[in-house]
Image 1 (cartoon, helix red, strand yellow):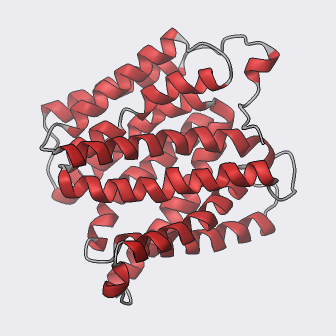
Image 2 (tube, one colour):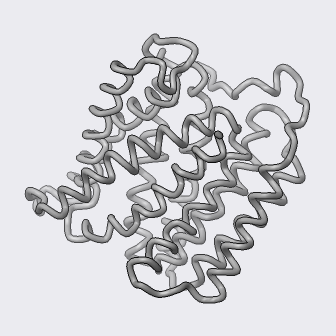
Image 3 (tube, helix red, strand yellow):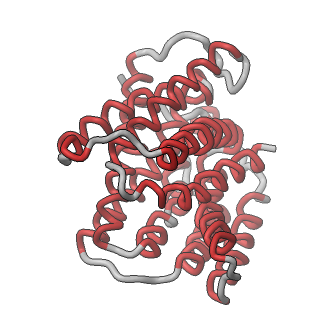
Length: 302
C-alpha cells in the first residue's frame, strides 16, 4: 500500500508538467505562491476536519526545532526548487534538467541511511543507480550552458532535501500537517522571490485557463500528491521511497505522449523498462535489521 501511495503521488507530480505549460506567460514565482497559499488553506482545513488522516504521534503544533526544519523544507524543497527549475529551463533543455533531477533516488539511497548513522545498503544503492539510468533514457539528452547545469543541480538538491527534511518531522507532525505547514511557509518565500525578480511589474489577474491550472496544481499536485507521498514516505523510509521519484519522468513522458497522440520512441521505452527493473530490485529488498539508534528518524539538534 505505501508503494502505491508514493507511485500515485509521483504520477500526479509528473503529469502536472503538462498543466504547467499554460502558465508560461504568468509570473512564475507569484503563481507558485498563489498555488501554495490555496493548498495551505485546504490542507489546514483537512487536518482540522479529519484529524486522524495522515496524523502523527502528537496533535500539538510544531516546536521550534520542527518549525526550523519545516522552514528549511519550504525554502529548499519548494521555493528554491521552483526557482532553480525556472532558471534551469532558461539555460538548458527540459531533458537535461529532468535528467539531473532524476538523480534524486541515488542521493536519497546514499544520504538517507547516513543521516541515521547506518551505512547505505548495496542493493538499494544499486537499484537507485538503475532507476537513475532509466530516468536518463526516458528524458533523453539536450543542450545546456553552465548556468543551466548549476541551476539543475540546485533543483536536484532541493528534490533530495524535500524528502529528507520531511522524513525528519513526519513521525510526530504527520503527513497532512507537514504538507500544510510547508506550503504555508513556502507561499511568502515565493512571493518575496517574485518581488525580487521583478514580477510585480507584470502582476495581473490570471486568465480563466491559468486560474484553472493553478487550482489544479494546488489541489492535485500539492494537497493530494504531497499527502500521498508523505504517508508513503513515512512507511517506506527515504531510500526505498526515494527510488519511486523515478516514476515522475515516466508520468511526464506518458502525459506528453497522450497529449501529442504519439507513441514514445525506443530510448524512452527502454528507459521505462529500466526504471521498472530498478524499482523491482530495490522495493523487494527486505528491511535490514538495524540498531535502535540507527532505526530512529534523524533529528536536527536545536
